[in-house]
Image (cartoon, rainbow, N blue to C red; front, side, top):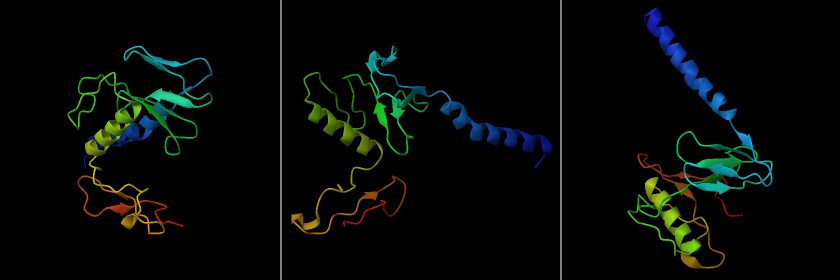
Length: 155
């Protein structure tokens, strides 16, 4: 590899490696009675005091976490009623019950991510008491076999 190309590649890799650090510094601390306002989307939300929040760089959502997004997170996503559930090609309406909205949102997210055939970890095989639980699985759209989730055994 030419020295100039190697330097360009090294600079590109370094900027990719440092990008998450630059983004991590922009998290804000949630304070009681000071809601986060998203003027572009027209909503405000009060995150739990002491949690960190930020507009997510990969979407139009706002995310909040107490100890880190891998441990717990709250995501806020604003959707217009028209075509609110794009993967399902379905609209929302102002008179939908929260349960209907949640069911549609979960189904839309599952279809969008190719997870619609994953079993519900809360179901019991055979439908009876004392039967083995179904093993949670994650199927990535272009992967072969499902992988078992951590802690999938029923104790």
